[in-house]
Image (tube, rainbow over all chains, first blue to last red):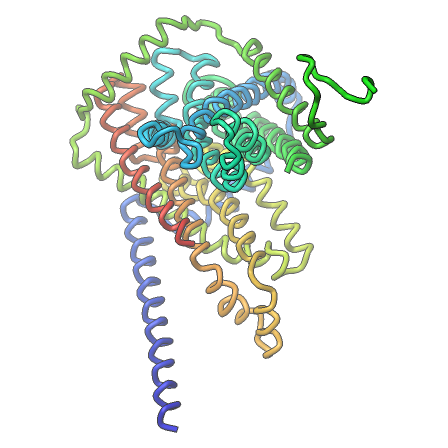
Length: 270
Length: 273
């Protein structure tokens, strides 16, 4: 009888400790929220109020007039350019990322020095934000497609190396070991085990990056004066809100179509 | 006899025949390669002089990374701007996490009705389709340029991302445990907060921190492109107004250091989950 009571007391203690921990975590997070709010001058009520206001505004400007629709061809042309840049930069980055990932994966690295060098290069290119790349490149490359392409290339490259290394480690461990046991050479292991095993998952990552890059390309375009981002910025600054809504709608539809296509492809290959 | 053995171009005997899936994948790869090469020619490079541009960029990179120096702002205020950017990222992540938790209960198919799940998933797909910078600028019309527009704009994408991550974590939990609690007559809130959340806690924390890491990068971008303030705005000013490569270099280093630390913590949390 005594013993069970003791255990019961212990259990209560454990639960009480857990609740205390949870309570303190909650207090710390709330304090941090208010601290962050003070640092940035963020007002929670104002933030809440802006959500319905913005949606009301967005839908009020969706009744497009004739003069707005006349610009549609221009919008579509720049949208196409933006999509093209994001696809081309992603696929090109994927080729380089594939090589670096094979160098950087523990499973397939030639030697540790090369492995860490590959990982470091990827980490630097990934952690410098895409805006910094865009702002640096636009100074010398000017406002044309090459700036957007290179900015997206560097950011995508860094991300894909990380994703590809994880894919290689996950997908091809056993196969690589089996092939090594048969006495296969290094190029044979890469060509017959690593690439076939990891390729579908890698392609799925490439599709994911294409979707992401269309949105990033809008941001880069806004900063460097190219593509659909530039057009958005232009009309935004002219306070032509009907055009702003039209461009937003066009981007949404384009992204949804691309997501739909890549889901179809994913279903086929995975 | 000869006709039964297929040989390849080099006269060797073919030992494997690709199945239809492999064939499709091969076609897809070839198609992508052709599209990429064609894409390079379709892009508009007007006004680009390639070699001077490459040399100029390399010189700028050299100045940036080898002679970093702050000129327009002092170190203390630059650090404060980093804190502002971190705060913007933190606010949108935490507020997003709270909203996402409840939306994710509705989006997870094992905890909710199919039609609710479909409505929420459709809603977040549309939200995700709008680039963050456009969200921020749209909210800036309603709330004015600044922290409010930035946090709410970033919040939308955080919610879209976290609902997907959370609901996938919820869908993987053991159905038996939910059933056991149902059998005891527990109500819906009990099931959520006694089984679902404790079971997936480490996943939730890892995904939330991962989003915080992403939001730091986004907050830098919003400072530069949407006037949200913080270190991103300083970066934009020093590169596009002052053309001060030394300062761009120093700011890039500061962003890089914070981003690498965040990435290391995110990796730790992810491998622990």
